[in-house]
Length: 312
Image 1 (cartoon, rainbow, N blue to C red):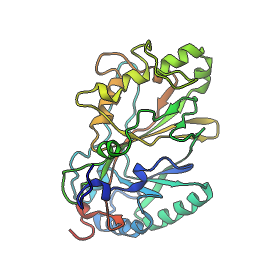
Image 2 (cartoon, one colour):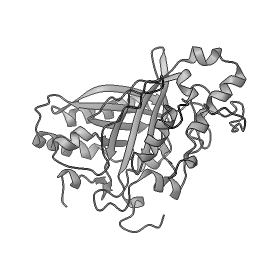
Image 3 (tube, rainbow, N blue to C red):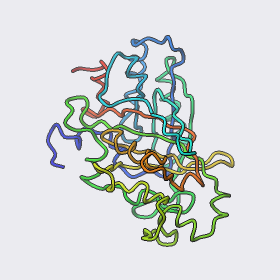
């Protein structure tokens, strides 16, 4: 993608394009009172922006928050229902989301406290999930099942094209639309399946990550082949494993120039296209699903002009 002053390459939150960090923390905030007015929300966002560099802290706003500010972002809407054909894909609307990235959980705790204090009293933390890289190699990490995660991620200019809005105008170009789902793995069920059958759940061989030509139509790889959609449905995945006590799974995070690509993949996984559901649902279940808009950057700070903050 050719860089000019108006291209997303100069405008996006850089942490979106960067590889997943060694550790991360996902924070969901909600308004402390539905009567909190737009002025108080704007004050809180103004206070928190110095802590949001777009690299170590990536921020996303939910549709309800944008609406509360009397603003409108093209293509931004709540997470739709995908439950059908015997699978459940819950929608859990979110207000404000932050992805904290780093190398030490202690440091992330201190960043969390700064963000919390800046957002108070208008916002309070509703949910917190700590995540980590697992079995990292030069290009990808692994899911807790042992399968490589993000094999088909676009790279370079293709990643920028997939992840960031362009051609929408000032204050919108360089933004990203992110889908966030917390998946809980049933590792006992996964381990009870024979090796050959495990490979067919994903559609790749666990031992070498090679795609299986004879994988069934239920295989996750076949359900979500990004180039098989019309138009093609590429997203930039930045998912990471998580664990809390004896529960564990994957924080699925997919950035796009719109929600089209994620929705196309999710509909096919849930059986909307042909009645065939993804075998992944047999070993893992989503327990949340939210959409957020990640604003672009301008002069090293969040560009919130479309929300009525800052200069136009």
